[in-house]
Picture 1 (tube, rainbow, N blue to C red):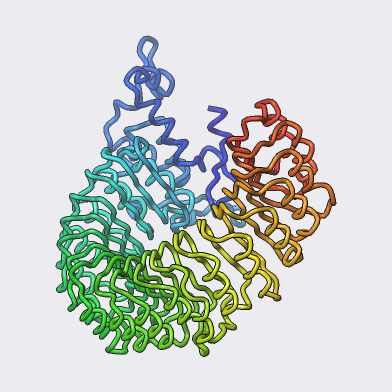
Picture 2 (tube, rainbow, N blue to C red):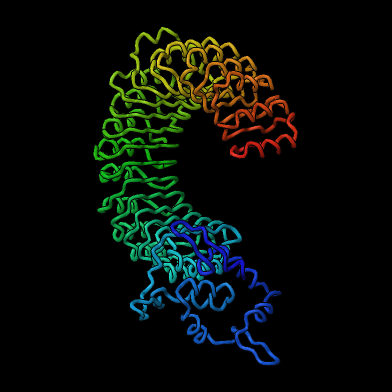
Length: 629
């Protein structure tokens, strides 16, 4: 008991505390012990309030009415929570009462006279998360009782449990009327009855349902009718939720702003059309793997004036006509971010219509759009005048001409351009550069894992984008020292971040040239997987890169000598250093300790020449640094 009396909670928005402010998780652990069959008799012996000469009798023998009259006289919810630690009966009883049914009074002394003031405790400040075996009805009941005395439960997350039922959520609904955020992931025993109980929490603002097969329209309709403040709704892999519940949301939840629906086979055009044609103020919408058609996209284009973020993934029944209609209507006047993944309806014609109709569009992501070609990409880039970021991934009909045409738009405001796994991008005739204008606005360029991308492409892109600050060329095995050097020498502004991971044909020569030209501005350098990089590069980095904060040379030819070069000049201020898979040994320990003043992350995984004792010593000496070994 002394441990309990001196316990202080760690909740946000709460300071100080004793037994009465016990954290509900600690309370749950105690209950689990006292609930164990072999411990039952010890409760009776230790907490007996009534005794004779021969027999000790537990408080558990009293009827519920007596228990209620005893414990309701405790000083506030904190006292009730403390009592629940030693009496499961009391926990069960109090969790079945509404907070409004218990009026707590605090005795205060004013002018030498005692009076009673109402306690105001349950404002919904606390967050609780239960996962796996820890998620049970008993724990939910304890949370309902414990949090009501310490600010009130505002956010609840239950994940990966088949032991939670409507009994636990009934306790939450009664004890936590100010619940605002509820997340249920992979809880197969939760059905409509639980949501009907939760709908009593009329301040609910956010609901996240994922892999809840027993929840149907009935439960979600109850939420819609009783929770008018609902502003965020996520439904994923709930096979029994369909159009009826979406229609109820449209009628009863005028504040809904964020909507995500994934893998729900019963959601169709009717539900989507009702949602968007109502007076909702939706701003963020994500649809994935739904059986909707062109009609839904046309409705979105017609009524989606308030949408700012739209993501459409794997909509197999939507054709070119649907995307064309969505953009051609011209009512997506607030749309700033659009993501389209695995949708065959994105063609040259439909993408150009989106560019012409979405005048505020700034960020565009296109992944696995197999029918998109250079013509549509260039037309879109010219039409979307305010576009700042464009990402292409696995769009295999896009070639060198499409990339160069996108970059050379004279009126473009694009700052970031990314091309990932586009197999159609291969080296072509170098003379093609004469037909394109330079992009003055582009600051960040990513060309990643494009197998056919080589030195010619790199040189041309370098000439078209002279103001780059960040370059990511991950996985370009086709580029060599000469191609990268041609890119580096055209950028006089100074590069800040360079990622050359798995560029296996680069050598020390280009790294030395790189740090001589851009070492004064370089903040991040990644040479991971560049097997031809040796200690010579580390020496050049140590001499020239005083502003470098993040260095990754994993799986390269670096040894202890290279590590020592980082400390030689004494001007390095590295914060993160990765040497995973390098041939470094215990000899580098002194160098690591010298870098310890600024180092916060050190990766020594697969460095088999470093002993376990050396790692343990390093952990002690570099106590501010996270060390992976």
